[in-house]
Image (cartoon, rainbow, N blue to C red; front, side, top):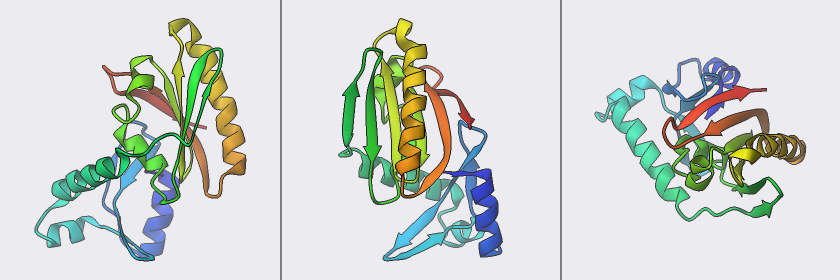
Length: 177
């Protein structure tokens, strides 16, 4: 999950266009990267077609792999505040924030309560599950404050992205700030 700026930089470095697709937040794109040992290989449309699988199958397989790598991921920290339950999902494998691709399924409880998610680094996603509809705005403010704090301490910070979660409309909207 990358910003348009990052996608442009990757294209410049590779000299070719990575396979990508749009995401709920128009400021972000999903790209496909194969990790082999210490090497990261960015997959292009041409490479996906050359495998005989095609882009759609590569996308499907990548989502499935991320899902199965994620089912055991638990919050590294959880705080109950007056307005919300705040959960920090952090991993060191570089996929922490990419789990946002799986929202709202990955954080179903927060989505069910009309909560929020913030992506603040490559490895960190924070969610806020309001303690009821009357606490939504307070939960949003609490998440924003924690996102700023966490981004300042992050090893690989990214421009923060805030997402509204819901079950019906999935991630209703996102905004880069």
